[in-house]
Structures are given as C-alpha cells and as structure tokens.
Length: 393
Image 1 (spheres, rainbow, N blue to C red):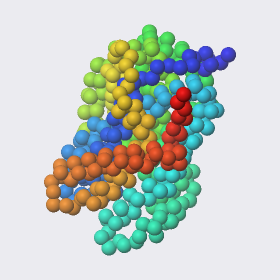
Image 2 (image 1 turned 90 degrees about the horizontal axis):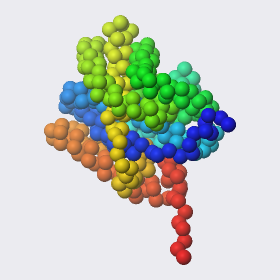
Image 3 (image 1 turned 180 degrees about the horizontal axis):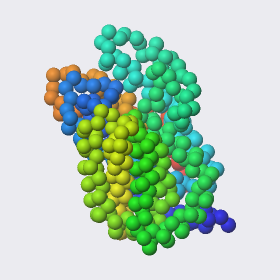
Image 4 (image 1 turned 180 degrees about the vertical axis):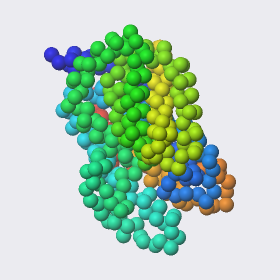
C-alpha cells in the first residue's frame, strides 16, 4: 500500500483558512480599485489625481495575500487528492480551472484592454467587437511558460492566478504520492526543530532575487508561488507543523515586519527594483521574499488556535462556493466602473468608495443572478452542478 493510500480518507477542513481565502478574494476588489489612484502602477484606467499612499498600503497586501491564496489552494489539493486520487484530481482541475480560464480569457479579459485604449486616447473610437479579434490575435511564446500565448493586445489579465494554479496542480498530480511519503519524515523533524520551517524562506528569497519580481503577478516571481503551493499541499495540515507554527507565530511575525521595513530603501530609491541587477536590488528582492514567507507563516500560526469545531456561517459557505466565480468576474467589473468614475469632480476617497462599493454590488449580483442559476453558467465559471434534489416522500 502506498503512503498516499495510508492517509485518512477525510480530514477536517481548516475553517479559518477558508475564511481567509474568501477575504483575500473580496480584498482584491479593494486592491485593484486602489490601483486606479496609484502613481506607479500601470493599471488599465488611471485617475488624473493620484496618491503615494496607495503604493505604501498596497505593499502591505502584496507581501502576503497572493502567497497565502496559493498556500490555501495547495492545502485544498491535498484534500482533493485524498478523495479522488491523482489522476481524477488532474481531470477535475482541468475542468474546474481550465474551463473558466478559457471562458474568461475569451470573453472577460478583452474588456479591460479595450478600456485601456479608450482611456489613454480620447480619440480612439474602435468598437469593442472590432477590437475583440485583434485581442485574440496570438502567437506561441514557450519562453514565457506557462503563459505560452502572446499578442499585441492579448493577455490573461487577472486570470494569471488561474493559469499558475492549473499549472501547479498538473505538476503536482504525478508526484503527490512521493511528497506524501516524505511529509511524514519532515513532520517528525519539524516537531523536534521548529525553526526548520524557515528554511523555505531561503528558496523564496533566491527565486525573487535572481529571477526577478513580476509586477503583473502581484509583485512576486511566478515560481515563488510554487513554494507556497507545495508547502500548503505537503505540510500545512500536519498537526506537528501546525503546533510548531503556533509556537513560532509571534517571533516570526515580528521578524517579517522588520524584514518588510528593510525593503523600503530599495523600493523607494531604485528605478526598477523588480528587475534591476544591482546588488542592492538583489538584496531588496531577497528580503521581500523572506518577509513574505515570515508573514504567511505567522498568519497561519496566529489563526490556528484550538477551539471547538463550529459549523461555518451560511454567509461564509455561500462566499466560499462563490470564491472562484467572484475572482474571475472582479477585475473587468472594477475596470469598467473605474472608467466611468475617473475624472469626475470628486475627491479620491469618494471616487474610490464608489468604485469599490459598485464593484462589490455588481459582481455579487452577477454571481447570484446569472452564474449560479444555470448548469451552463456554473460549468463555465468552474462550479459543480447543483446537488440533485431528493424527492419528498
């Protein structure tokens, strides 16, 4: 019997991490709305008045939010493989991630690009339907794996997360059993030496430093996310690892804050800290990666507190099921609303509040009124069909 089949068939879900996943997805509405007012980011639609405060506040989000989302996804893959096995897991991921990726790329991602052109040039009058085939004019670019399609206007936009998550899942499937076999030994070692949980910090730091940080992927190198995903799959649900994280949470959290503060000189003074090859830039990126690992480990430990098992609220169950559709929908909606709001004679705080509030209302309305209502729309957005209704007796 393989090590994988020896694992328990079911395991209790980490309710606090499910909640965190929902909060990160909804938080992206606040984050992407703020980029409209950032003086540095090349967002689709920009307000004429910007503020440096956005850059500072955004940094507190990018250092942990998307890494945590990949870690939670990795933990979810562990539960899924336990139930289905690796082959069925791969097929399920192709359906649940691949279908919304294709649908979203074809029908949602062109809108922000078209609005970018209209916002940048008041004289641009090409209709959306004439722009759409130009968006879909692509060629292969294997060097940018896994983003192998490229074009003058083509992009996967915010769906880069889905591209990477699908890629990581397919890479994981054939090695899930060996990883599970090694996890037991690693858990025993961590139980004796909890500080070993900081070792992946070095790998994340090296990846960010020498491969560069990528602004289009929330400020992290794409392959750094794989470290968080694999950790989530392999170790995040191990009782011994969880106990170690609870003990380390406070000192590691303090270290993360100190490291994050240490990146400020580089990000403030360098022209391009994400790709600059100078020693100062390399150190800045490495320290940022180390800070991110510490933040994520500290959050895991601080949230994981012994408590009586309680059923999640109806609202959290609803939003948990909606998380992927809401993610797929959110950025085109934010950009469309921002396009209609920027330039109005109103303070930044009012414009921002209108974009955030309007976006949340629209994406929730689209989900409730359209996405979850039919089998076809549920399929296109990566949702399972409604459970069969048991006839009353």
